[in-house]
Length: 271
Ligand code: MLT
Image (cartoon, rainbow, N blue to C red):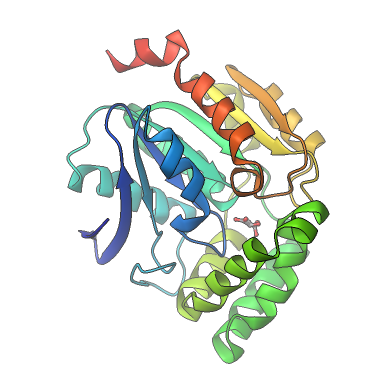
């Protein structure tokens, strides 16, 4: 656990294990804690690094608009600060996946592979982008309560909501603890993100696409389509999970990631 000066902010970062680096990039409006089960288990195979992105968790906020490019540049700078020169596997969930597209474009040499959980390549439709900008103003005025109410319904599968009230309560606490400035800046940044779909066929690197069977935000069809457009992707559907499959069904997600990390093409890429 540490707090590191990265560009113009301090980022809070949790690290476990040693070996090939695995960078875990959380979704909106969460923080590194969504990866608790991966930090615990995958640190047997890898050096697992889970930062709080700027504006989230215990990291500083910075800027009124944080583009996906900015988050990607923060992460590349964080690897420098941590002294990690070897290529990493970048694992992003949802907004973490939007950041992954920019990381590939801007920092390709730092990558060994990609894990994409519950995400999409398309930009927001104009109506959705406008709704994000409206929500950015609202969160600054009234705090994150309305976001927690609106999002928790959609983030996890119905089964998770019923069986794991503890998990839903912890998610709510995380959303309510987030800084309104950080949330607003990321909402504006997501609204401005470009369509990454045309870039997918050029992304020549091993990829694992992970989708919860009940994901209400990134459907199985959409994610399977995304995997089909990536030249070297495998697709895994996680039964009984919604949008947050790493949190909802950790054994299945960890097994998929572990098999991916063991692929010969990933060890070749390290040399
Ligand atoms: C996330 O989980 O990061 C969000 O669902 C992303 C989004 O709002 O598009």
